[in-house]
Image: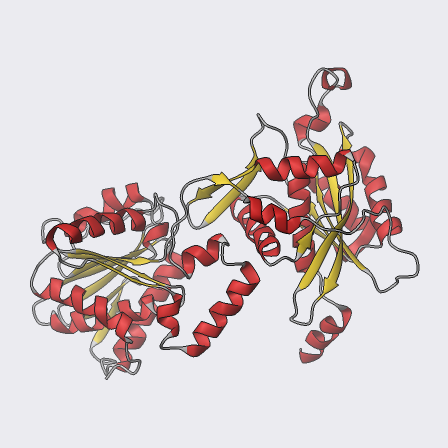
Length: 461
C-alpha cells in the first residue's frame, strides 16, 4: 500500500481526474495548491493508480515539466518511490532514463524547456503539465497539447499562480467559464490556509513567511495565496513608499565612539556608455546615469533579521570608473568601516568590483545583474520594505534625497516567465541608479553574518 495518505484537498481533484480518465471524458483540469502543499504527491499517487489500471491494456501517460533538471528528474524519482511503496518494486522497469513501465503501461517524462526537442509521443492515459505557470504557452500548444488530441486524453495542469498571461492562468479562466456553462468542475484551488488546516506546522511556517515578506509581496501572493499578478505597473505602492520614510538624520561618516555600529553599502556603477561620454556632450543633456553608493546602518533583531537605516548617499556623474575606485575604497574603509559591500559587477563593473575586492578584501561581494539575480534583488528589497525593515533618512533638502524619492515614485515592475520580476525606471523618465544602489545595500545586509555566528557555524564543521 502507498504509505503517504492524501489529504481531502488532494483527494478532491484526484477523484475528478480519475473519473475523467475512466469515463473517457477528455477534460482539461487545473489544480492550484499552495507551495509545498502536496501537488507532486497528488500527481505521483495518481500516476501509480493509473499505471495499475492500464498495466494489462497498455498506453502512455505523459508528464512535462518546465525543466528536465531538477523538475522532470524529481517527478520521475517520486514516481519510482511511490511504486516501491506500493509493492511494485519487481514490476516496474526503467527505460532510456526518462520512462517507467508497469506491465504494458508506460509513464514518459519530458522537459517543456523551449529548447527541448520533444519526441512526437501519444498520450493515451493522461497528459500532465507540472508547474504549468512556468511553461511557455506556445511550446505547450505546439508540442504537448497535440499528444492527447487523437485519444481524447484527459489533461491536468498543476501549479501555483503567477501572472494573468501564464499558461496555468489561461487554462484556469477557460475552465471557470466552462464550469459556468455545464456545471462540471474543472478547476481546483487550495491556498495555504486550506493546506494549513491539515498541517499546523505548515501554517506556522507560512505565517512566518508572511511576516518576513509582507502580505503584498509577489511571491507570497502568488505561491501561498494563489492570487495572480496583473501585468506590469508601479514597483512600489504609495503605502510601501510611506513605510520607507524615516525620521533619522543623514550623516556623512560613522558616529564617533560607536565602535559597535554596523554599516553595509550597495554600489551601482554607471553604464559603459555613460562613463565614456564626452564632457562637452554631457553638458548638453540632462543628468546621466551615475555611480551611486548607498550606506546603511544595520541593526540586528532578536528574530535573526535586521533593520536598515539609509544614512548616506555618495554619487558621481560622468566620471570614469577607474578615477572613482580609490575614492570609493577610502569612503567605505575610512569614513564608514563597512562590514559588507554589494557592488554591481555587470559588464565594465567587473573591473571596479575586482579593485574593491583587492583593496577591502572579503567584505566586497560582486553582484552581476542577470534576469534571475535582478529578480532576487527585487524580491529582497520588497521584503525589507514590506517588513518595515528599511528606512530612508529624513528630508535634508539635498539633491540625493530628492533623486532617491523621484526614482522610487517612478519605478516600474515587469512580470516575466519562471516567476521572475524586473524593476526599473523608464529611461524616458529618468534613472534608477539610486534605486539599484539601495537594493544592493539590502543585498549586502543579506551577506552580513556576525562574527559570533560565523564561529558557531565553523565550529560545527
